[in-house]
Length: 277
Image (cartoon, helix red, strand yellow):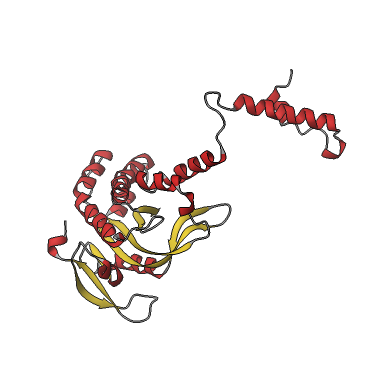
């Protein structure tokens, strides 16, 4: 059987030391031929800037709003690969009651996947609609932040507005889950912790795998507040730094606590009744 150009291009053949100039030229020509046959013919090859723009669009289109993707494509310098210190607001939203549903559906992975998508999809849409960036999903918990990669002087208000929208969306989310899975399950609720402060923001990880993420003490406090919201029987807890930055929402102090892993007390807040959804 005659070898195809693709097969010839990837035939290891003799060792590099035994190849002559003619053989090397022939190998290069065959590789170019194979690449040409696989390349799209409807458009010319992308330039370096176009390739970079496509990479940015692909990487961020699932995590940030379309408006922000356009800004990143126009100015890739907004992405600091080494990380930078930014004043941001971080949100953790944990769905309460989903564990019971997951246990009931553990033998039906398709229904479980539909259920988690019915929960995470609307929560994610709310984050993006309020200009936030989705950091990661941790089971039925969403972590998001505001204030990076673009400047947002109202990042605290935007994060709190997103939190209120999540709380208001829970009846519809429960309805979506009931449509997605069979059986009767208790309604789910949500607990949210929000905190603000200086954090390191950037592409964090290693060369093989990295994420656009945030690190810092405000992140840890936001996570603690999400867990404490259940103890205070309120769906939303705000850190003192977030409450101090709010310009369009009213918060009230409900306690002073010692957050595990931190020295000293800090005030915790929730929204006043008039600001709740």
